[in-house]
Every structure is written in C-alpha cells, then in structure tokens.
Length: 208
Image 1 (cartoon, rainbow, N blue to C red):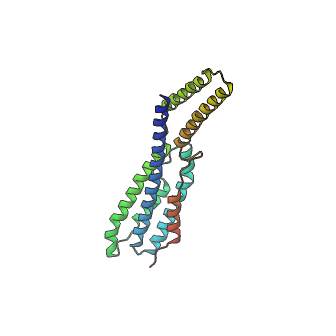
Image 2: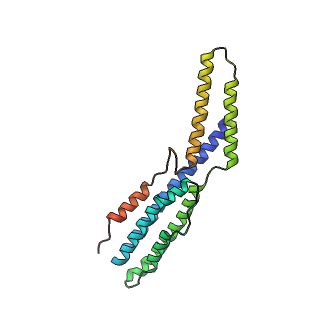
Image 3: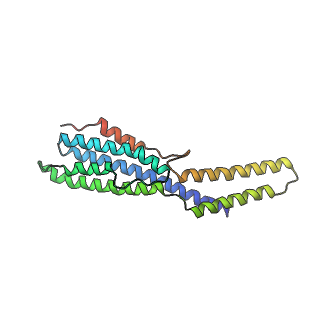
C-alpha cells in the first residue's frame, strides 16, 4: 500500500513540476512573439515602449511573482506589467499597410500570453491536497514503526534493516514535499527561458 501511494504521489508532483516548467517556456515564447511582431510596425518609439514593458514583465515574473509563488500566494492575473504591454499595443497607429496585417497577430500573441500566464500562476500555487499529505505521512510513520518492531536475533542486521528503511522513507518524503513546491527547496524551477527571452529583447533591438 505504501509503495502504491508513494509512487502515485511522486508521479503527481513530478507531473505538476514539469507542467509548470512547460508553461514558463511557452510564456517566454509568447513574449518573444510579441517582440518580433512589433518589429514589423516600423515604429521606433513604439519599439522602445514595448521593449521596456516586456523587460519589466519578465523581471517582475522572475522576482516578485517567484517569491509569492514559493509561499503559495497567487499573484494578480492583471498585473500592471501585463496591462502595460496592452497599453503599448493600443498605441499602434495604422500608418502603414503592414500594420493592419500584423495587428491581429500581435493581439493574438497578447491573448495567448495572458492565458498562459493565468495557467502558470495557477500551477505555481497548486499543491497536494492536505488529506493526501496526511495519508502519506501516516503510512510513512506506520511503515517506520513496523521496521522498528520487527524482531531480529542479530542486532547489527536489525540496525542495518531499520536505518535502511528509515532512509528510504525519509528520502521519499523529502522528494515529494520538495517537488510539491517547485519554487522553493532543492529542486527548483529555473527561469532560463525567461532569462534568454530578456536577453534577446534587450540585446537584439529592431533595425530600421
């Protein structure tokens, strides 16, 4: 029973960990798409505003929102950084034939960013239900007690058996608890996708 529960719980937290990581990558891709579409508008002033807004959005996500998620606090869906990007899009002037063709793509990229952001924020604060944690801890304690109560004629073998069992149970518990919070602990989600997107936007300005 313990093996089944431990395996199920570990797979569940691992899938949640990977799902959150995937959402971060997709969010970074949506941000880069917005930046690339902005290039077609041939508006230097708009470029500068969009660059500032996107960099601010990424910085906020990697700092403040990361800290809140590690504490299980959900950040506001409509952050000022996200609304700043929308405000820049609203300032687009249709003074070129390409503007009308690019604007729908830019608007769709923004909608995709907002949707992925919502999923990422929700996934970031999703934890194992309390009852599952209590059930798992209870089984761990019962199994550990059973290891201790097993009688052995050979004392060294009893000690080795007990230490071995306690180590496995303790490691399993630590892995599950650590993966349950992907923003804190030993196994943390990295923001390489966000960092690379920020470097791309900062170092690769649009040419005119």
